[in-house]
Length: 379
Image (tube, rainbow, N blue to C red):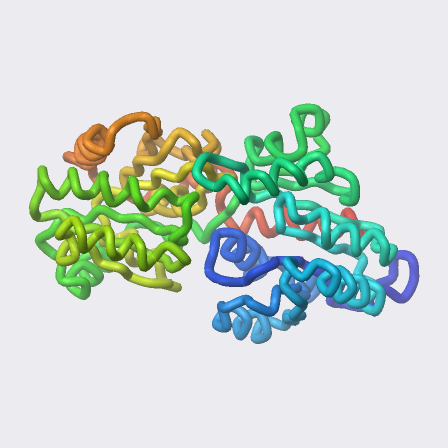
């Protein structure tokens, strides 16, 4: 039981956060950043995750911080999923159920509504783009139901909020925007770390192109490899650092081999110290087909890197002149030339103050989120 009377809670108050598949994606990173920095003596999270989640390290960290992991059937098994969620919500009497499933939030929030949960939050982290027909069909089919069951609406950017909840909801102020905030000091530029990491990767004398993102259609790795092939043709001392994992990893690996680039592309896998790899890079390329915000681009920008990203990212991601937008209609060669141009003569420096000014500092944003929870709970 969270509650003893109307506004008299047992502390910490436990809030149910519906995550879905906990892997190593952007949504999990955002939620964890806030969770690590929130006042956990007063507010704690119960993470509701699908049984086919693969990130055990995050689960262990959550438990070490006092959180709970509640495993449910995958949402694809709809009847079992709904039945299990309804039981969990009914038995735990959560004051707040907070769903991070974008258009799919309709399902857990329906269960929360049935269970009598009074505060139901839908948070949108994404939009839609080309190349994912099946996924987009589901998104557009569910979008009209996005505002039926939540009592509160949130999004990672104005663009993401407008995409799912509509212009009227945004203009009225009903949608609360929570930036994908980061530890700005952790991702600040550090010359010593740069040199050490480049030595560790054996790229001290190389021109390092970088990218971080899950290997899935949205991140557009196919085009990224084409861009790097052009960069490598112009600069044979270039290397590509790819951080992430995902269903398309094998196919992209095969493409790299087919282009004869296997000695110049380093697959870093799923890394938990991404900040040091940003230091090692000379330019960051992010050609996503769509993004709710583009957290990796913000992290790279904070580290002082020149960043070249697709114009499908919302403008909110631009915290300084280090970030440059480019159309996906441009050729791989044009992207390559632009990437080389923005990195030529670029001087790295600490961009933390810019990130803080634009509301991307996790410490201050976590305080605001805590205050919002207190306001919702009346404590």
